[in-house]
Amino acid sequence: MTVHGTAGIGTTLLERGTAAAAVAAEHAVDVDRQGRFPAEAIAAIKASRLLGAMLPVEYGGEGATLTDIAEICSTLGQHCSSAGMVFAMHQIQISSLVSHARTSEWHRGFLRTIAEQQLLLASATSEAGVGGDVRTSLCAVETEKGLYHLEKNASVISYGANADAILATARREPESPPSDQVLVVVLKDQCTLERTSVWDTLGMRGTCSEGFKLKASGPAEQVLPRSFAEISARSMLATSHLLWASLWYGIALSTVHKAQAFVRADARKRPSETPVGAIRVAEAASELQMMKSMTRDGLKRFEHAQADNEELTSMGFAVAMNNVKVAASRIGVEIVNTAMLVCGIAGFKNDTPYSIGRQYRDILSAQLMINNDRIFGNTSTMLLMHRLDAHLVN
Ligand SMILES: Cc1cc2nc3c(=O)[nH]c(=O)nc-3n(C[C@H](O)[C@H](O)[C@H](O)COP(=O)(O)OP(=O)(O)OC[C@H]3O[C@@H](n4cnc5c(N)ncnc54)[C@H](O)[C@@H]3O)c2cc1C
Image (tube, rainbow, N blue to C red; front, side):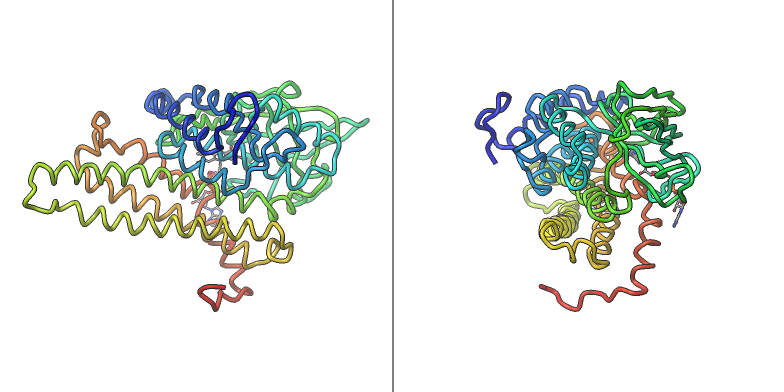
């Protein structure tokens, strides 16, 4: 896709993503060491107008597909996992708004503002007291005289302090059960964020995923018209799993590149012998291909389901998306571990061209970012009823 806007005349989405990834690469080590927001990378992403890329053209976007965005997540992931994750999480919110909020005038205006001002969106689904159960809320929206009020003890909001708006889940009203949720667009100037926890973690340090007490108030029309159950089932679950898997693929790929370079350098030193690590590179490359095929298949299935409501809401589709997430997060860790084995101490050290420590720490978050056991639990319930695919091709 070619853009003819002001910032990136004549450059494709991927070319702009690659240029932003080069900026991310320059600062990735510092972002990780300081545990700071990847400000330079996100500024480059904004300057090339990628934050609004997935919005339809009539709202000032470029109508990019999820697959276009997944390629950029993978590209960013090869250089800075945190910048890639910020980009992925923002696009997951965009996808929810595009799919579920266009019947509301307020949200249509908001979509235009996102494109014009390149607003960065964050997500507050996690809540103290419910763990990682996205489909349960304790807090509730209270509506009075056309205004909503919300107080949420959000255990994690990635880049909450740097976001222009936060999409927060809450019970529909104080009398609603925990699963009757809505999604509210909370603008930065309509809320206060009181920090409740710091983000001093093993990996993904630049996502700055701190805890906050969020207090917000604004026009009631900012609550999305569709239930969160519907938003989660029809878009958020799939887009999260697919964009995260794409990012993790990029992280894993970058470590196999390093392992391959390490083995090649070894082979140049001793041309008569095949380096021992070469067989491990072959193993990692095979796992990498598996990860790529699975993610691409998931993306293809998602794009197809956009035009097929029955498929989109089917159990088979939900099982497939869950499987992409758990499998990619497990294989990703294995690949990075294999690359570490190849590079040995040069991979373990933080100051060599083959250093893999940062990527290793980052990829470990994949299993926890909605815990795999929670997803397996959900899939296992569906598999009590759902038949496995009988065909390889169709
Ligand atoms: C890098 C990163 C960025 C994040 N960014 C955000 C963000 O921007 N916004 C946001 O809202 N959240 C965010 N999260 C939070 C994330 O999505 C999860 O909510 C959170 O990681 C879950 O925390 P937990 O492990 O304490 O809880 P749980 O998922 O509750 O897991 C705790 C333990 O309980 C077990 N467990 C609990 N329930 C079940 C069950 N039903 N079946 C099986 N096992 C179960 C798990 O296996 C695990 O051992 C982020 C997380 C990470 C790692």
